[in-house]
Length: 238
Image (tube, rainbow, N blue to C red):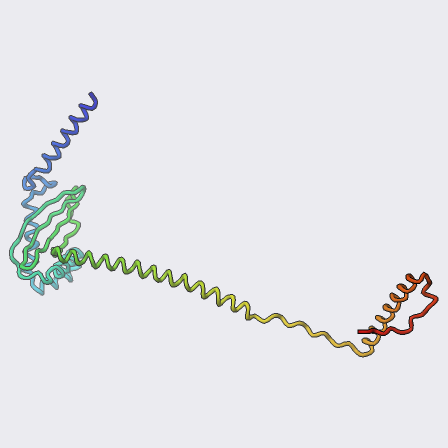
């Protein structure tokens, strides 16, 4: 039973969505504005921009109105290479969430230009006006290819830079080790030379000690006392 109810509700929602999609935009009330009023605002703006003289353009740019200044600047940019004016084309209204967008196509000899009004729907306050030249398929493909190549070039450049930095670490470590090896060892303090008298006294003392040791060894091996003999001289043989 629950599944049947959910199925019926789903079918009703689908039918309502289809009915909304098929609604005639010219009969819709856009928060107090009609389709013709919105279209008229876009058409009037397009005609004013078409008939605008250089003095009027300068006055608009110096008006201090940021939105108006941007509109005139964008119009100048969109006019490059479009050719002569032909006619006003299709008008389209789109509501998306809290935003209402009105697009007026302006057809020129070489390519069309789109004039767009952007409103906040709940109070119909004008948020922005844009003018954009429509690009051909070839131009879109060219721009996409250029963006792709630019992105790949940046990635490869960064990778090469990282590789060079890593290789530099090897040379830096070698340079540091070389500095350590080349550092001179601290010089030993020179030994002061002893006076001759002191050296003779040290040599005599050494001979006395050596004689005492030899006498003790002879006494031990012969079983006699060191008083029975005297060591008078020691001769070293090499």
